[in-house]
Image (tube, rainbow over all chains, first blue to last red; front, side):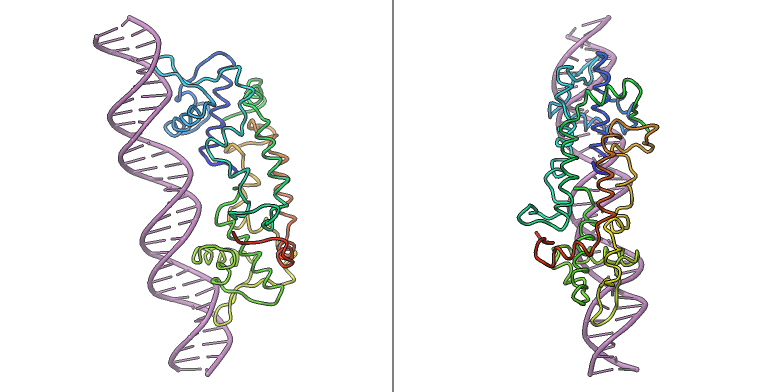
Length: 145
Length: 145
DNA sequence: CAAATAAAAGACAATTTTATCTTAAATGTT
DNA sequence: AACATTTAAGATAAAATTGTCTTTTATTTG
């Protein structure tokens, strides 16, 4: 809808990793893609991106997998994931695709998009993985289907 | 950012057609793609879609081109263009790509997206081509670069 | 140290989106 | 009626995104 498929999987994966890290469990790609219903190999690639961007942490070898330090769960915001995967066009880009669109030289939708974009940006920068994982934990929300 | 390239071109093209129809001028694909800075043949395809969906009107032959009846400028909303080109995922789809995501079985972002999506939907269904074209006409907004 | 496990990296494939080119159909002009 | 103009339609191509497969690297365990 708004994010690329890669970004959707990335967010879902990160939330699942966070949920399991809350229980002190490290999780592998197979379990993750099973639990968020996503293609395994593609999900692996996306997890690599999240790892390279220091959003989650990975450990190789037996009993390895992905995890996120409980210390970081609150400061890890959705905006970081979106930026790492889709870039920041979603915040900075023009709704009609103009290269240069701003208050001085606005596209016809510029003003109408301002609020929507600010809401989106605020939501993404203020929502943490911790917050999303706890909703899952108590069974209020779902990551599959 | 939010719309496909096709949809961006579609909106820009429709606004330009409206602007010219305000002056009683019919416009051809060449002029349109020149004025909105878009690929000609691709723009032609998109104009076909808008025509098939009765958002704008086309006339073949010499002095032909695209136009929109002044009567329809106000009832022609952005939502119609978006729906015709990108479909309605943007309104109805889940932000995280779940097939089934609603108040009963929400994804972790469902509630956080509700407002944003409603704002977007309201903006699109309430903004008319007429409104956008008049902003252009008085030099307040731009369709290029 | 050898074996097993799991992520990282890179090559490859399929699909979708974006974009172009060619031919056909319609319509106004001479 | 012949011709020029302009959209419509369809085939094709290029690029981006999505997805898979194979090999390499790191790490744990026996």
